[in-house]
Image 1: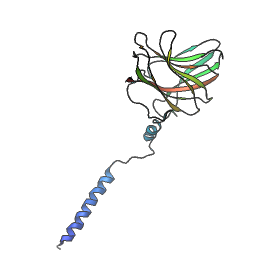
Image 2 (image 1 turned 90 degrees about the horizontal axis):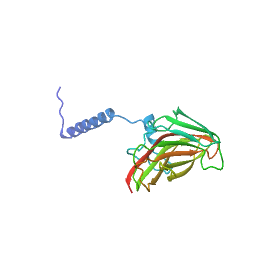
Image 3 (image 1 turned 180 degrees about the horizontal axis):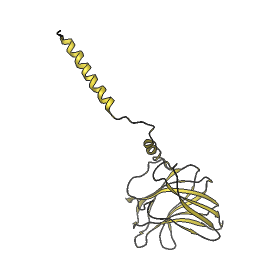
Image 4 (image 1 turned 90 degrees about the vertical axis):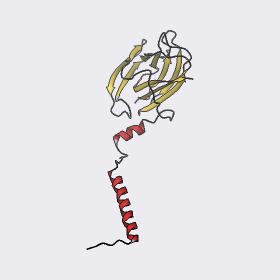
Length: 210
C-alpha cells in the first residue's frame, strides 16, 4: 500500500512533528513545585525589619564560631543557653536564648550578650548588622556595636522590642573610628526589664568605604 502525500500534506506532517518535539521537551523539563520546603525558605529569608532583602557578602563574625559571653551587673540575674529552633524561617536552626530574672531600673543595662569582632574594622566604613530574633514576652533590648576599649563608645545603638514571632532585623550604620589595634565588640544589652529573648544567625557585614 502506497501513501501519497500532496504538498498540503507535508505542511500538516511538519506541524505535527514540531508540536511533538515541543511537547516532549516540556514533558522532560524539570518542574518547580512552589510548595517545596526549599522555596519556602528562600521566600521567607528575604524579609527584614526595613523591608529590604538580606545582604550578601562576607561577614565580620561567624555566627557558628565566635562564642557569646554573658556579663551581668548586680543585682541583675540572667542565664543563657544554646538551643535548636526548628521553626527558624531561614539559616541555621541554632539559636541563643537569654532569660533575665532580675534588673536594676537605674542602670542602662544589667545583662549583656557580647561577641568580640575577630577582624579589624576601619573608620568611615558602611556596616550592616543582620540577625533573627524573637521574644514570647516582647522583651526590649539594645543592639550595640561599640569600641573594644573603655569608655566603649557605641557606633550603633538601636533599641529593639522583639515580637513573639521570628523576625529578621537589619540595621545599617557607619563607623567613625578605626577598630584595628583593639577590635570592636558587638553586644545585645538586656536587663532593661525582666524578660527573655532568642537570637540566631547573627552577621555583621562590611560593605566597604562610605
